[in-house]
Amino acid sequence: MAGAEARLDEAGVSLWLTNWPTSAGGAWTGRRILALVGGALAGQLDVLVHPDGQAVSVWWLEVQPDFQGWNLASVMMDALYAAHPTAWIDHGGRTPEGVMWWDRYNEPDPQRNIHNRPPAEWARYFDALEVEAQKAQNAYSNRIAGVDGHRGAVYRYDERVEEEAKHHAAQFREPSPRGPDPAAEALYSGMSLHLPPGLHRLVHDGGRDPGERARMLVEHVGHGNLPHDAAWHTTERAAYEDIAHAELFSDPSVQPATHLTVRVLPVSGSPLPDHDVKATWVTYLDSPGIPVQLARMSWRAPERPWLTHSVDLAVPVEAAIGPRLWQKASPEYRASYNFLGERHPVAGAPGPFAGREEEIREVADRLLGESARRNSQAPEVASRSAPRQPLPQQSPAPPPVRRGR
Image (cartoon, rainbow, N blue to C red; front, side, top):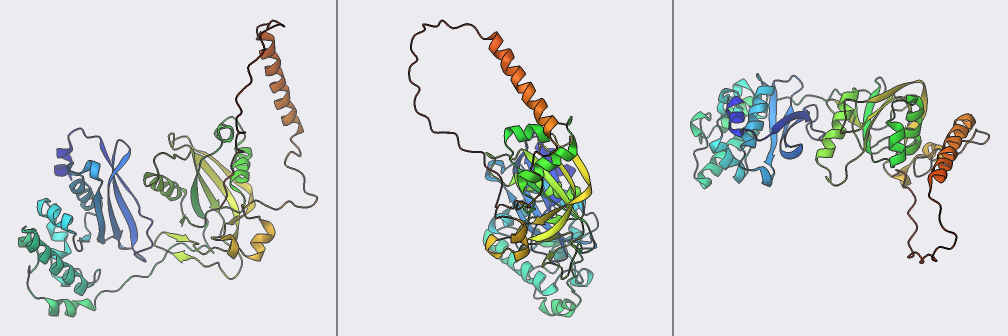
């Protein structure tokens, strides 16, 4: 890795090895190496990692147009070898651009590239027949492009080895996913919120009770709006990582102001809601609205991730993972929530301001006092001043928008 990095000089490049939330791979874990320049996304390398960590499949390598020529592709690939120092690596087939890059690339450990070794050594991890097809494709692409493609390192380059591949193909076994169990494990997920300025100041005010601020956030999001289209992990860190990862690929002109994660207790009841189990997470892509117990909330501003606010709820709050489509929401969900994910009013239940009379009185007194102070400092205006010019007609300001589906 040092060789490729040495050619970057003072470019200000950083690398981030993060989760790759892909639906592909089954039991293989999606991982992504991101190259960042000044915090902006410059390139990415997507891979799948075998459950035992001893095999890596390269799926995609890309550098953004504005950052090509910086040697970033080599830096990311070197980082992959360093992150998995003992694993077999399958580079797969190559695009025309990939063929030209590979011819220039100085592979740090060619002996771990399965294209360079006999299938008897790695066939338990990869389909030998599929790998031979990739090798044949790459050999053809090399000839078309007129490049060597490190052919001297490739095992029996450009030879017919189908029989050998067939002999070892039976060794390959696809592992079964063994991800989280929603019926037995507490799970975390997260979302990005662009809060109204006033609410943003309140929920990030460390001087206020964290339980009260958590209640504000729940009311803003909606008790029935926990994310159905995001991954649910076994750790809070993974949930935060998902949010930050998604922001790198979002519209840079819209920056969420708050990252919020929630922890829900194991889903009770039978049968268990339909879910898709991956290597380290689950999803509820077809959620009809799943009742859960909200047990923890944590939030922070992306520009200050070290300052995290959190609260463990002594009494878990009734909430729900939102339905994918309101039209397919279950009768139980509709009985508790409206189409915005807000709870229906309960007959006889106290209003939202019940028990907060003293707090409201203090706020009112403070506002009245500040208004009186400003009036006392205002300069006197002559009673016979010139008549005011009529103000131009303006459209009323739109009401604040709550987050809903």
